Image 1 (tube, rainbow, N blue to C red):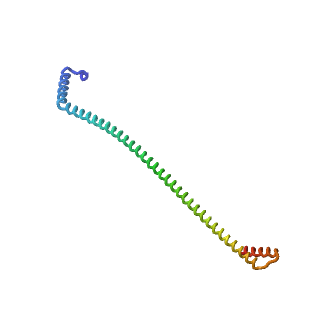
Image 2 (cartoon, one colour; image 1 turned 45 degrees about the vertical axis):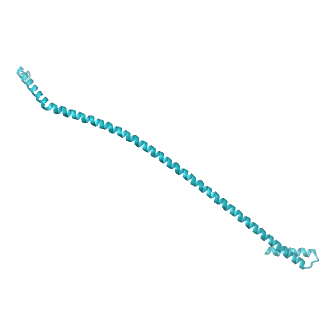
Image 3 (cartoon, one colour; image 1 turned 180 degrees about the horizontal axis):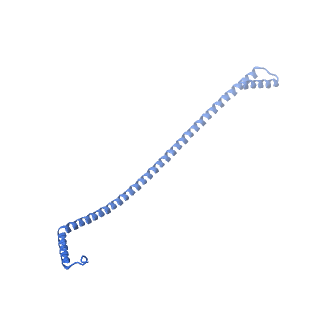
Length: 164
């Protein structure tokens, strides 16, 4: 059991060894260890600051991106609105042009019909006049005593003119 209970000399030498080790470590190792710890702490701090800065930049970029998207949507809507207005104008212009052309065609057709009607009426008048003159010549050229004969002759002439 002597191993478990240390002796005073052992305690003194252990204390002196520990003190020397402490002084040696303090002089040679403690500075570089603390320097490395401080350097590591500073690099972590810098990394956190860089991460915060990157996060802020990302939020700024995200806000800018949203703004650009919003502007692009507004521009798209404006372009679509202009396209709809142009389409409506083109359609209304085409409808007006079609109405104008159809009215012109109807007016021309009415004029042509009226001209044909007038021409047909003139031709009919001329035919009636020629027919009347022909009837009158035949009636005058023949001496007819009987009224019945005159009526029959007029009916025959009218029948002949219908066949033509």
